[in-house]
Structure formats: C-alpha cells, structure tokens
Amino acid sequence: MSSQVQENLVSSNEKYASDFKHGALPLPPAKKYLVVTCMDARIDPAAAFGISLGDAHVIRNAGASASDALRSIIISQQLLGTTSVLLIKHTGCGMLTFENRDIYQVINRNLGQGATGELEAQSFDFQPFPDLEDAVKEDVEFLRKSQLVAKGVEVSGWVYEVESGRVRKVI
Amino acid sequence: MSSQVQENLVSSNEKYASDFKHGALPLPPAKKYLVVTCMDARIDPAAAFGISLGDAHVIRNAGASASDALRSIIISQQLLGTTSVLLIKHTGCGMLTFENRDIYQVINRNLGQGATGELEAQSFDFQPFPDLEDAVKEDVEFLRKSQLVAKGVEVSGWVYEVESGRVRKVI
Image (cartoon, rainbow over all chains, first blue to last red; front, side, top):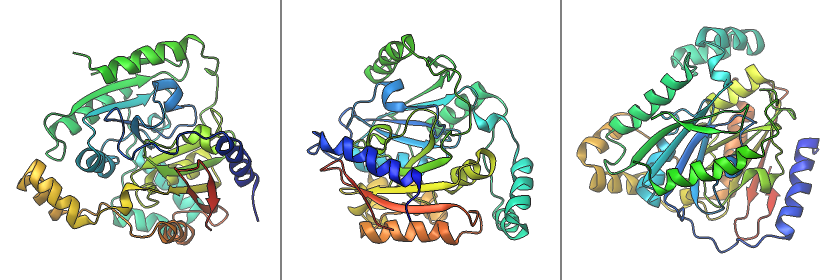
C-alpha cells in the first residue's frame, strides 16, 4: 500500500525525470567542496547556498553535527577529492531546545524501557547544544584539529537564519 | 581569506535572501516525513523528490546509511512528529566502488599511520556495499526491526537513477 508521502514522491519525480538533462554528470563533485548542514525542513541547501547539480557533496543530520558527519567527510575527501568544508548550522534549531535526559524520557514513554536501555548501554549522545555560535565554532575546531582531515582542507563555519534566508560567517 | 567556494555561498545566498518569503515556517515538518538519501553531488532531493520547503526532514550521508542516520531519525520521530521514512539510495554510488581495506590504504598514504591507527582502534566501518538493491532492503529491514523506531512508522526503500533522474521502489 502506498501512502500519500510515497505517491507525492512518485508523481513529483515523474515530472522531474521527464525533463532530466543531467544524466552524464561525473561522480566527483565538480567544485570539490562539501556542505554539512541540518536536516531541518526549512533549509533547501541547493537554493539557499547556491549549489548547482554536480557541484558539491551535501551532508545533513540533526544539528549539522561534524562528528556525526565524519564518516561521510572522510570518504568525500579521501576518495572523491573535496578540499573545502562549509559547516552551516541555523537559527531556531531543534537541537537548542532539549537535553539528552529530555529525549531519553520521551523515548522511555513512547518506545519503552527496552529502547531506553539500548541507548543507555551505548551512552548514546543525541548531541543537543545550548548555544548556536559556540556549537559552530566547536564543530569547526573539531574538524580543523582532526588527524582524519587533511591539513590543506579549508573548514569554515556559518549560521543560516531561517527567519530571513540569510547566511552569515561565524569562523 | 575567503575562497571561491565561500564567495559563491555569500553571493548566491544574497540573491536567495533578497526574495525570501518563508520566514514564518514552523519547526516540525508539515508533511510529517523524512527522507534519508546520499550526499552525492548529483542528487537534488527537493527537486527530484518533490519536497517543498517546510515539508520534510532530509538526512544525507555517504551511501544513505540508515544506521548512520539513526540519531537524526530518532530525533525527527520522537521530538518532531515524523511518521514516515523514505530511504533512497542511488545508481552509480561511490559506496559500490570500494571496500574498507581500500580506504584504509588511501588514508594511510594520505594522512599517515596515526590516522589509520585511530580508525583501527575504533574498528571504524565506512559502510561500503557491494549490491545496491540488497543494501536498500537491508537498511529498510534495519529500521523496521529497530526498537528505536515506533511500530506505526512507515519505512519504504527506493533507488534513484542518476542517469535518468527516475526513482523506483525497491521495498
């Protein structure tokens, strides 16, 4: 059975594919950079950050976490030749609104003790943060200092304002 | 000093923000779903999958890995109310082209023994896969069976063809 969400995917994609002209793009990003940003529904990276199809890797997770993105960043740099990272967190991020103990409580209520126990056994960190600009700086420093990121790689940190559509540089 | 990549971000974003009309969108995704797809430069999820601004969380990592996305998926479902997951891997994926030992060798050559040692100490898995459709099915099963995903959540698996722009359902 196909839900409305699946039907929207199929019908929207039919329109997109009917006019598709980019089938010969190569695998490595043409402009050799990658963007790490949040999964937030209010961000359209291609439009807001000027990424044309084929130009850049785009990694997205809750809060634009650099450590969460590390596996993807290493692959992007070591196998596909990217040499620049734009790390872009945003105003109004959900990660500013809770602490680990809050989500553990929600999970315990919704999914039961077994789920919470699995997370506790792993000391699972959902990576919320209390201050947006500090979080940007910390993630940029994490990547700049990591021995898993080549010294020549340029790493910069930004904030996207969901209220205005504007980006501003933090570091 | 600002690189060409940073200059492109700033100048493209100025144009985007000058005409921005979506500053009042709420934090939770309006259509209550999330998409997990690859970081690949040839994928524009908003355009190819019909995601309007504000509608859905979009999680992207190397290979559209469900386990890598788990932290983000739990936050999306438990704190922001999403109830449907579209997991979309793609043809021509870089993850089909290597094995862990290959990337370990590359890292050893490019970043030195210290970097490789850090990865080995963690048994770091880059999560390459040898078969595309099997990988989609395995990731969907992983989410369907996980006690960290609520039973009512709909999880489906798809392949996006970078050659044609088309999606097709796998599971």
